[in-house]
Amino acid sequence: MGWSALARYDADPAPGGLALVQELMNTIAAGKPRREDLLADLSTAQEWLNGALAEWATATAVAPFRVTLGQDDLDGLRDFRDDLRHSVAVADEGVEHPAGAASRTLPAVPVSMQWDDSGHVRPVPRGSGWRKVASLAAIEVFKAQQDGSWGRIKTCRNPRCAVAFFDRSRNNSGVWHSVKVCGNAANLRAYRARRRASSATM
Image (cartoon, rainbow, N blue to C red):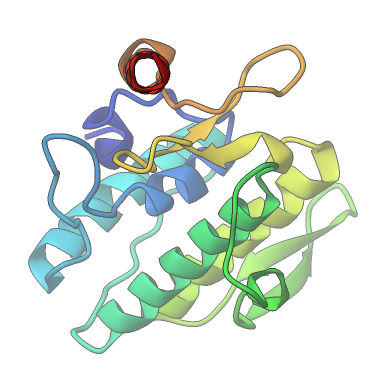
C-alpha cells in the first residue's frame, strides 16, 4: 500500500522510520484540490494506519505489528497529529505564530525501555489505540532529533498547501514541499502583487 498520505501530495518520504511521522502529519485535508482527512472516520483511519505500519516495518526492517483503533481513538490521534504539525510549524524560521504558540508541547505518551540482543537499550512503544501510534511516532521523533534529521521536517510555506515534507536541500533552506507546484505559484503571486503596486504608484 505504501505511504498513502504522502503519495497523494507527491511528497518524498523522509528516511527510515521518520517517514511514519511525516505520513501521519499528512493525513490532514490539504492541497489543491483539497484531499480528504484520512482520520475523518474509523474505517478510513484504520485502513490508512494498516498501510502506514506495514510501510514503517519495511522502512525500519522490524517485524510488522497491528494497532486496532476504536471510535474513541480518532480525536486523540487527530489531536496528536495537530500537535506534531504545530511543533514543526513553530520551529520553521520566518513563520508567524500566535502569541504563546512556542510554549505548546506534545502530550506525554507511554514508552518503555528494553534491552536488545546486542546489549543496547532501545525505546519500545506502549499503550493501545492512538496512544500506541503516538508512542511510536514520538520514538521516531526522538531518534530523528538525535541524528539531526528532525530539523528537516517542515510544512510547506504555501498556506494553501501546508504539506509536511523532508527538506533535502544542502543547507536545509527549503520552504516548499514542491518548488514546481508551490514555489512557482507563490513567486507568480508575488510578481503580480509587485506589478499591481508598481502600477498603482504611476
